[in-house]
Structure formats: C-alpha cells, structure tokens
Length: 351
Image (tube, rainbow, N blue to C red; front, side, top):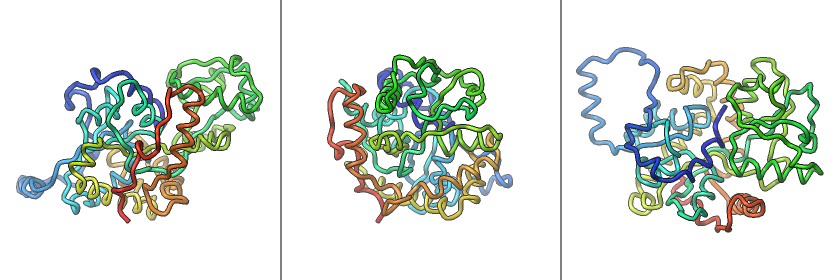
C-alpha cells in the first residue's frame, strides 16, 4: 500500500533514533537496470558533467510508488540536471523522514499534513515546513469486504479494524463513528500484520486503503470491496497527503535551490499528468518489484488527482490546513492550534 500514514507518528519517537548516519539508515533508489552498459569513457564524462551540479538529497516516506512519480520523471528526463541539480532520491529504513529532514540528513522529504502539524505542535517542535502538495485531495478511506455489507461507520460496531496504531488514526475512527451514531468503544482495533487486502475476507473487517494503490490491487485481483472515502465523512479530513517538506533554514539560506528543485519537480508531475502510461514505465525502472500493469493503472488514476481543482501543481490553501488542525485539536491529537502560515508556504512554487 502507499504509506501515506504509517510513518506519521514515528516523528515523535525522538531525534536520537534518527541521528544515525545517512548511509546507515537510508537506501538509495536507482534504476533496476540500465538500457545499456556505459563505457569507462562515458562514466568519466558523466562524472565531469555532474561535478558542477549541486547535490540534493530527497528522503521518501516509503518505498518508491506512484505518489513519487513526478520526481522520478524529473530525474529520468534530466529536468533536475537542467536546473543544475544532482538529485539523489532515497528510501528510509529507520527513523522518520520529518526528523531526518529536521536534523539536516536530507534537503527535502516526503511527509503528510498531519505529520507536519504534529511535529510543529509537539513539546519539542521539529523545524520543518511543507513546500508543495503532491496530491490536492485526500485519496484514502475505509475498505471492507463487500459481502460483509458494512456500509457506514456506524456499521463498524462489533467489527475488527486493522491499522497502524497511531493516535490520529484512532481519532478519525472515533470521530466518524460518533458522527454516524456509532459507538467507538464497540470497535476492536488491532495492529495490521501486513497480510494485505485478503485479510478483509476472514481475518479482519476494516482497513484504511489508498485508492491509487490498495484499491487498484483489489481491482486487479477481482476482490470486491466496499469503500468509504474519509473526506466524504468529515470535510476536515480532506487534507494534503502527501506533501514535500524542507527545513526552514534551507528555505531561508538556499531559496534558489528550493525554487530550482520545485521547478523541475513540477515539470515531472505535469509530465505524469499528460503521459501516465509513459510515466509508469519510467517509475518501474526505480520500482521494479511492481508490475507495469499495476503502476499504469495507479498512474492513470492519479493523473487527474495531482492538480485537480488547484491553479497549479503543488499549491496549498490555508483553509485545508486550518480545517484539519481544528479536527486534530478537537479530538486530542494535538494540544494546541497552529496557524497555517507556520506549516506551509507556496512561495517557492513555479508560476
């Protein structure tokens, strides 16, 4: 599944766990295999050409998937090089992305609106800020096996939900059940064992799915689900997930780097919007464990979601941040409110 939530709360685990060296806790994402072997002269020429580029490290939230396609397109098509950047995209294997970006282990990271809000309102706030929304609307929701006829959150009573165990997750379930006249205390919550959508048939009853990934898997396997988008249950749950983050010091001290990175990244996502099939082929070079069919189906779905009703890719709005901040404060996920302007900026996006 696309992990838009499992690492959300790891950010609160503490900076100590993330102070490992970057090489010790992160895995570089490279193409599965080059189209042809490079000669030593080609390698030498490449080293000379990249030596003038500015090194940039991007830390993903999870393994490479269609949330990240625009960056891989920008890498593969040379958009970053055109901006004078040598971008290295890496996957986290320990620690939280937000924490790693906060302590300078990466220039940019992939995170989530709730992650940023929790990090900024924690007793020991992390210096991070969102600089672009990858997808304009929340494309996640609750999934159940269709034959069980679980049609609304009230029907969650007496059922078993398998999730990640985070406080925000519990808050959402508590809220949507109460709003639908249900009793949250009658829901059995367990930690997912990672067995996937098949678990919905006879192991558990409810899971949190992502339309561009989990729903696609179900469709490919003719596994019928009942799906309830969370944004349809409470308008405040239509938050930005995922987002690109940076350390405020990077924004202040290296603004041109940020602009160059986002210009190339936006170009990559616009390519993915216009050419989803070709973009899926590019992504598979870096994510070879997934079938091209699955990546293509996922990419075709997301092509209309990256920008959707926004004026441009990456743009964010105060009301979206404020709505979810109010929700988290109401349900005790955070202890204090925070102004949207402290959480994000559109300043560095290309016009």
